[in-house]
Image 1 (cartoon, one colour):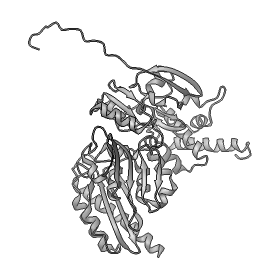
Image 2: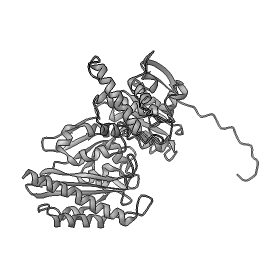
Image 3: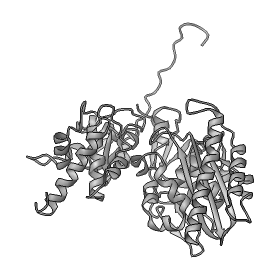
Image 4: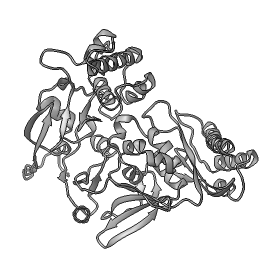
Length: 180
Length: 291
């Protein structure tokens, strides 16, 4: 630019391509029009208003945004919403039934598995995936399973206890209450 | 953080993907697991015009074993798949040892071995493993396939030898020259951090003697290092303490680490030597027990 002021032609609005996607979220099929660069975490929080999923570090470290994609935990800040097209997503809102908490949620309550609560939804989704795969985990198994989720309050001790509590309860329920 | 705008393509065949890369003329990026690419897009370190998502291409998620012990790992095999394969644990101890140490369990559900190789991070785990195993990457371009040894794939930090119109479709591990042994050790400050030092050691044993050896070092140079001299020192004899010490010393000499917040150069070199000894010592003692 040679002068301080110069009139130039208006820049044409860049066309914003969108894609229509259908995602089953907590059992309910939802169809929406999204920009490909929209992150799954943002689709869940701002699009679907499911604010249980938290965005912490936004750099694939902390795991606060963990949701289940076809049953497997993923960091939803590091998946594009378009990649969930035709797939099933489960967020922390999908855990509880209409009138009762999920055993994992009960475990976190009874064993004081949270303080500030920011990491809790991600922790619970990692725990859910672990218990779906391994209903009888050792303490070591639990620690490995949540090693991609950071907690800055608890020192993890009570989180591990909460998950083991939930495992016990879920096994007892499976066995028709014979155990426990 | 949001990525910049891009055109999103989700082809359903390898040929379509290659055509899209060709049309992208260097401004298209392949999205597989996305665990490195999406953070780079968000930080705007990468700003491609087109993203070619290969996750909808069927038939790229195979982990197959040849009768001769060779292995093929498709472009959509996730790290988690490798941690769960019992056949892999029985047939290829170096890959089996490395898989549970890649990133963290959540990232492992998405990230892929082939994608990691292409990403060419000097701290990446898989390049060190594949260098030790003399593995290759198979790439498909408009005029066919070619095989690139992993040692030649990495040109420098985050630079690989693929042309803009080539899609990496699988990684291959050649048949071992004996009973495949070895391991992978990584020093990291916490789960999910980049490696301070990582070492992959592969030894194919013919009875008590080493028939073929490979050593790969991660995070101790501007690119993955093949410690060939150290590996050669192992070949043709048994895993005695002296031979292990010699290999460990040579490997540490090949390392070219920099001092940083993760440790001094001397410390990292020392860890290379310790890890080489530890992996080989474990192989030696397991063979004694078996004998």
